[in-house]
Length: 272
Image 1 (spheres, helix red, strand yellow):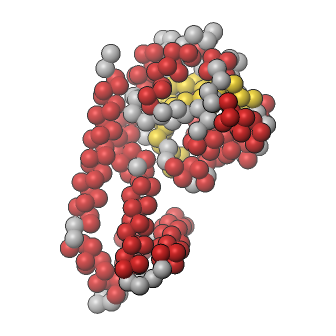
Image 2 (tube, rainbow, N blue to C red):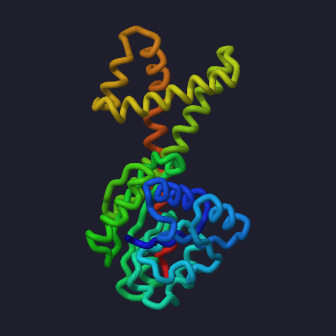
Image 3 (tube, rainbow, N blue to C red):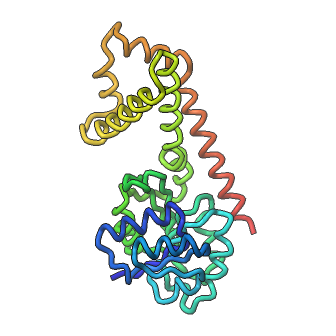
């Protein structure tokens, strides 16, 4: 079975670990590199796996190295990984935002296979939307390995790396848009006389149910919206106000800005 090292025991790293363990991955095939001793002990106690503070130690003898650290820490992690014997034979999977595959390939031994992943925070509840992109030296078999690994925490699609900025705008940052919409719905509910607790319960469950309906019904969002928008009714009036206040245009501009910022960060990290 594939042996996996997760570099970084934060929320995203733990979410992947929890999903793998729940799916039946033996703890002996997993190792985590976590520099904070207290956090490392938590992970070891919870999942029964080996935790080390040393990146090179974690990568020794594994097949896949998952980088789940902050973007600013990636360079130092790769510096440690590049010193491991046979480092170029390991599949590098990165969950860190911003850095293109070429950044990893430039700091690792020549020919190192790299697969970039754009996850999102619903990974924490096994409802992630992950997009994977193969680097220059990653084979279809490498991509399959990553897709199978991530399938335990949600859905996975493969896209060209050139589309990852757009993916970031839609799904990577997407949960924040939904949280903001719910926040606005709650505030409006309070303004209409509901308690904040009740307005929150109503809004959260409504978004949850709408998400399941879109996923499971087989109908498009347009069809589903139309099905609850009776001519001259209450929903039609609300939609009219949202459109007149520029909701669609605001989302378009916001997502363009998100994609542009993602491209900007990637271009900056690609510079020598």
